[in-house]
Image (cartoon, rainbow, N blue to C red):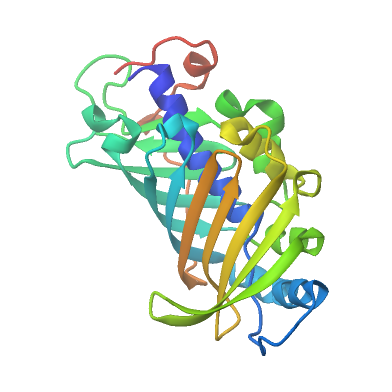
Length: 273
């Protein structure tokens, strides 16, 4: 597997992480009426504490950005932010050009403490012989600033609730069904200079030059987000929230089973197994 392939795959995973921490929102559903933008922003930020208490969420996501060639990449998994940002998800191996590393066509990966771990079938020989995980530090793709932004202490799904206080042109679009849940659809934009840590991450994977983050947010009758769609320059992210509070221990794979390819990727060399 070439370093460039690894770069593409981690970039897709990183932007998903950034997207989820960029503008998640929940709200108590009220009358549509002629609410002001300020009222809608207040409504969207009202459940910040409750969303934070959930600690985790099971999601289905689709990501499109320059490194994916305009092709949506599907990611399904669990995010945990109760004790630091972590995730475990599955992606089609072909989407990541990793199909030669697994027999079942699916890549399982984890994000733990700022590093990505990709599950692979053990190779009989070569540098990956007997290894079942590849490790790649986020800084190898995003740079130190981008990686720091991704792993900042407040960079979890609840951080986006706070950023919405800077939203402009907020509107209530209407009520729609999302995965069987009756939800209220809101639309809001956040200027790029108010995005905080997320700006560096989005910019590193194809969002450079964008002036705002456009978010469409669907909120169910329990006041929790059921769907989030975001557009930032050439990056588009669609997230369906299937459930909250699905606590799961996402552990670092054993060192003896892991091959670290961070330096190979940073140097632009080959990382082949």
